[in-house]
Amino acid sequence: MTRRTAEHRLPGDPTPRQYVERVIRVDHAGEYGAKRIYQGQLAVLGRTKYGPTIRHMQQQEQVHLDTFSRLIAERRVRPTALLPVWHVAGFALGAATALLGHRAAMACTVAVEEAIDEHYQAQEAALGEDEKPLRAHVEKFRAEELEHRDIGLANEAEQAPAYRLLSAAIKAGCKVAIKVSERI
Ligand SMILES: [Fe+2]
Ligand SMILES: [Fe+2]
Image (cartoon, rainbow, N blue to C red; front, side, top):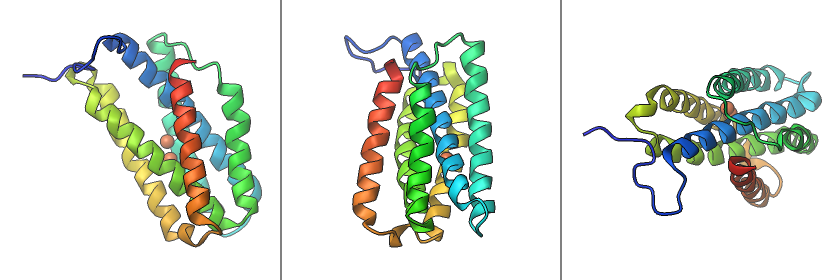
């Protein structure tokens, strides 16, 4: 028996087609935001010893973003109307945490990537054999997001000032961003 996309849907849940459109819309938004976060970090920390590490993550986010931009066009999905918001908010989050120091910047990375890991895991569970290529992208990107989280942890994220509070606040923000970007 092959698994189909969104096969466990309940009355009122999106249809498989709506579900896939939401996946592409929200992932495109998320990767766009991720790229902007790293750009914000680079504006502050680009010339420090953390520059190359952050640039490596930003380049991977660019590949993620390019993939979802292509899918938006190919599958004629309307992008979120909130891209201008994520343009500013992503950069601001990256720059603001970086201004607190490299540890806070890395704590931001860990929080964001953990939120994205959960989000991508849920998609992997819901995307069926009929959406194999899309699921493969999500799987590959999730592995890279986990690599980013590990980079953050290896660079003293947990020693950031008020780590727990900072992390919880950023994760909560990500969850809101995900919810609204699915629909709007
Ligand atoms: Fe990404
Ligand atoms: Fe990432």
